[in-house]
Image 1 (cartoon, rainbow, N blue to C red):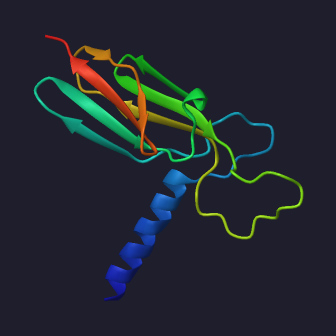
Image 2 (image 1 turned 45 degrees about the horizontal axis):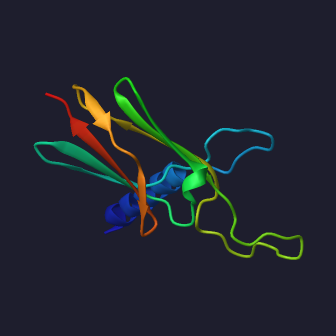
Length: 126
């Protein structure tokens, strides 16, 4: 029982480190990675990245050799000097996610935002 509990705590800690890294002042590095789902059929891959509250204008998507890169920023929804953060679970700040692609060539479709998720279609080339 204890080994199972320790395993769950270790898994939770790894997930926390993966999704939320507080930034150091003055740095422009990514502080978190949005979770993704990847689907495939015979014609394409579809990447779905969860990023509620991120406007399309704050998202960049580009392909690199062997990877799809999603980068952007999620701002705090409440701004002003009168508010103090009492509890914060959602990650904010600059994010970046690199999705390793299998061997092959792909045509990257226009990214779409739907229900708080970014959807990118990667058509397989023959």
